[in-house]
Amino acid sequence: MNKKRLGILGVITAVAVAVSTLVVPSATAAGKTLVIWSDENRAKTLREAGASWAAKNGVTLTVVIKDFGKVKDELITAAPKGLGPDLLVGPHDWVGQLAASGVLDRMVNIDKSAYAASGIQGFSYKGLLYGLPYNVENIALIVNTKLSPTIPATFADVEKTWATLKAAGTAKVGIEVPYGDSYHNMPLFSGLGGYVFGVGAGGINAKDLGIYSKTFASNASKLDGYYSSGLISKSSNYDFVQWYAGKAPYMITGPWNLANIKKSGISYAIASVPAVGGTLSRPFVGVNGFMMSKFAANKIVARQFLTQVAASDDFQLALYKLGDRLPALKTAAAKVTNNPDVAAFGAYGAIGTPMPNIPQMNSVWDSWGNAWKNVADGKQTAAAAFAQAATNIKKAIS
Image (cartoon, rainbow, N blue to C red):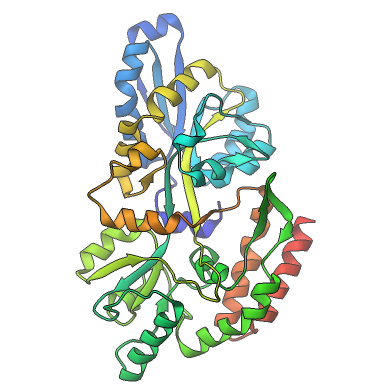
């Protein structure tokens, strides 16, 4: 996962290692144990959800809280020595590096049709499934309905609203997007015809780089115009100061900001980013789930936990309550009927694409982000900036 998204989500927290163990008397005698590495946010839910299952099955369940900024490297080093977990909780974009390093075991006996397609795609690598997804998340267009009473159906509507507000001196920027952040800019990028890697029947094709695709190249000048007119913010951060001050009709963010949005008292709506250049403005979709170590000491117990606990409606709904992320399990998602905000994010996420999980993605973020910064700063045209980014990335992954 790139460092920008790590900061955005706010759910993968660097914490000191801590251990919580549910000891069931019969488990010790039977030698049935299950070790799960998790972040602090989910640890309590994992313990509570697994308690009755552990007692019923005579299992000692140990949840270890890890520094998730370092856990991938730790797993790669510790697992082959027998010092790793049975299961790991984390985002799907870890899969490529971990699978390529030989420390993940594939999922078996999972009904893929029971889960959101993006969840299964996100945890798949080279045609094999390496994770059981429990939620999906994505960004969307957050509309200040006082400034934009009508939800924009087209990008022309967005431009018209901004032009009107700008002329009246009512708003300072049209769409507030974090500076240089490719994750948040993805809907605009894809709407202009850009993509990261092509996807075919065999999965992600790292040789098909779309950072400066033909379609994006033909639309690049539009991006220059969006910045020069103020339609897209040039220097905003993750505080979204202009939107919260009532000086921006739109911002692009995710469900992790819902609490702040509600607290602001601003009348809002959550919508899809309209197609920009005649192409659907697809957001990245993030997926969280469970991965199993190839060196797990108790694979049978781990698979039982996955199918009997993690794949249940109750468990996925319990995790949903932690942060308004839509459950990946379709039956659980269908029970989220009283949260229109989550439904709106989910509706837009349905056309999204999972963030690439292949190791080569690590070589994309910096060059891609610098392209956005250079255009925003006026140092390069969009055509020059993204052409350069594509060249740099190709060299890095070749």
